[in-house]
Amino acid sequence: MMKMRMTGRKSCATTPLRWHRASALYAALALVSIPDRVGLAGQNPVQQDTGVRMIAVEGEAAQYWSRWRGPSGQGLTAATGYPDTWSATQNVAWKVPVAGRGNSSPIVWADRIFVTTAYDGGRRVSVLAFRRSDGGRLWEGFAPTGRTDNYSHYKNGQASATPATDGQRVYAYFGSRGLVAFDMNGKLVWHRDLGEIDAYHGTAGSPLLYKDRLILYQDQGRGSFIGAFDTRTGQPLWRTNRDASVGWGTPIAIRVADHDEIIVSGETKVQAYDPDTGRELWRCGGNMWEVIPTPVVGYGMVFCSSGRAGPTLAIRPGGKGDVTRSNLVWSSPRGSPFVPSPILYGEYIYMVNDMASIVTCLEATTGRTMWQGRLGVAQREGFSASPVAVDGKVFFTNDDGETFVLRAGPKFEIVNVNRIGESTLASPALVDGRWYIRTDRNLMAIGKQ
Image (cartoon, rainbow, N blue to C red; front, side):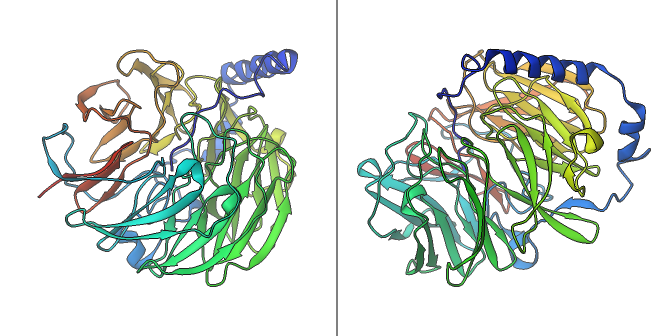
């Protein structure tokens, strides 16, 4: 999904004392060395099995890119052979127009690519299916008519949430229009009205497929919730109220030893929920107010970034109640993203501060800054797409359609810069040696013919 950028009502100007106190605390945490906490991740974390991992898709789904951030849920693919050089014409296998307006990222299953789009200011919203081999349009399925969200940001709209698929149905979230499921031929299977969504700047969080259910959270002005819905019928399985008023993130599912947890990085805190009941398991303070990036997982920790000024938190999951003092392994104010998600690749976390076009590399186990570097011309709110990593490289795409290819590792090195010349806010999908990139006008396949 496109992770939208905010300039909203809850700014540091509204709560200056709390903001500056929090910033001072984050800075202090980043400077203090806590050897026993660092040791929680293990002496040799690369090889040690911590019992904590992101729940990746399995079976046939692992071949494709069936959800936000792909099969790993973290923007990673284990495959190789993807090109690292392209332009508006070089290495382009095909390019087709996408009708309407939307910033949702493409997903892929078998020979189908799915995106969402909106027409007439959101009065009509739909899922579009394209043939992966040549870009031919296969079908378009419209959600039932209903409410139209009026709260949209100029970089957001009514089709920002990335859909998900299990190979039987395609699931999409359209804010006040609700959740919908289509079969693989475009027939509407079910529609679930979630009521009016009062989210300023609109909605953007994507639904998470977990076993036989969709999990979605929506923070808003009133009536914030996290809920689970049966994938076959759309029937609610549980719904839990949340004490948050703003946020545009996507939940993740993790395995912690003998149980699973749903993690939500939201306003002022990170929370974990029981996927079977919706009961809150634990919470950890430290986030800022406007939270967009999706967490990543590794080395026995969940890494969460928030706000325009950071911080990035490393939390050991599996606790009970308030774990801020016991399970916060490290916190760093350096280089945190506002909109794009971080990426964990090998020993390091990479993230772009999209308020300044600065990329930062942190050592995952300690939070130590390895390096920082600029990606192109400094722009405020210049990146929206989340990064991906493949073949020993990390790829960051800015809103102008420039993709910066960085060598993964402890030194800053830009391998090349690829330019397609089209506004690009959605994140790419990678399948079978091809990149699938959605711009503001087109869907492109980059890679082998």
